[in-house]
Length: 456
Image (cartoon, rainbow, N blue to C red; front, side):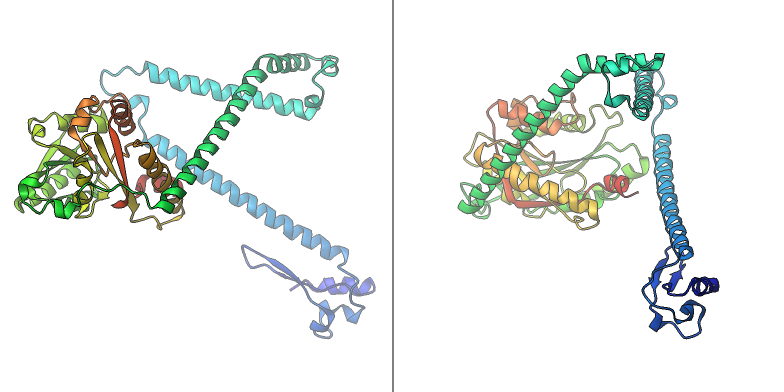
């Protein structure tokens, strides 16, 4: 409750002050006005029954302002604590990463050290320019950079006038050009998005979707010899959390076991994880699944190098198609029966791509936003491009390639980290067509690493 002398001062000033109740429940507080009828007679806050509606006295207003200042200070303290926590997390992540002192034996660190030095110089220069702009703003020079600024005495004023002329003559034109270019690119992208949305609407309206020449189930009734030879590749690296269910899903594909082979391409540098994956492979081998475990000690080319190494095996020539599943993907048992029939009678089809679906899309806000973004990519971009252009970017997983198309396009190359788009462009330039199946979904999981970064 309010101090007793509030009512005393109100009575001394003729009464009529509005009683105020202040609740100091930490960390929040609230103020509520109490009418004269709600105050008990004779209480200090009653003010002796003076006329209502005269407002707060000066001391009450002072206390209210002090309490509001207290709340503002608390919020600033909370913001400072949050900023400090972010800085500590960033420092911990940088410390946990690789530094110049962790270079491999014989590795030349001069290039990396020079690159870091350029970044430091750029940051220092940016801070100095920011300080100059703040000082000029406080002097009011940003409002008059012409003859008025030249008339100001002092070396700093002259230097700032020269800097403004340099910005006007040399920096402003290229920046204006880049701004205009960005506006043009934005308009082009907006038109592209509009066209894609109209195409998606047309597909829905007309019910357009790829149809194989023969349905998968009926087409494979004759016998095992009518099932094409399929090679299933599972590239992975330190995938300790998801390897078991992914290998189990791939080994459970509804396809004659004599007509498909699973390659588990392990690039893990953790011995425990490699041992667990190998043990899982051996378990499925004992159950009669044709599955091979391959481990690379030297990870040249990362994923592209891993796939290229697997394609160089001598037994690959016995297979017609290759399916790629990342370690966090779990295909349905009938995946091959929904995708492989689209190659029959279409010798120019090099890729059949299935859609992704996510088991943890509702886990948090980040996964929901990722799901919205990727749903547009699959539902609109890839479906429209597949229906009208017969080309879209390979997603790197959940796709079936004709091995002949891979070989004709030059195979996997380690020159880029986006090896999926690289091979797709090269295959398209060679004349191969792509088929996108929006109604064939493969379960996947959003990256736990990305979620951890954004949620910490």
